Image (cartoon, rainbow, N blue to C red):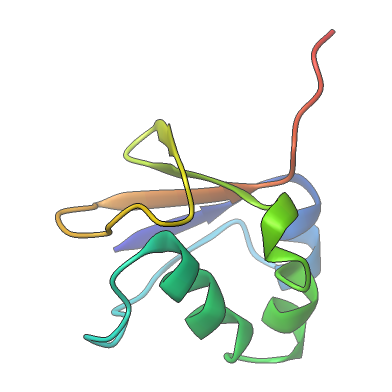
Length: 83
């Protein structure tokens, strides 16, 4: 699946996107965040407070407990403000 990172999530990880093949036990957005956090210091820093991270699967905003089955693209970004 393709992962996209935006704003300070991208800055902390050091890349805008990547292709990954997550292990079978990674079934939800929260599982993916946990798995990514263990991939290195920069990921741990980006996802240090998972409650503030927002996610979208195939361009639709989703909750952390949303299943990844069938997802092609997952985006991670910080909370946004209007304006």
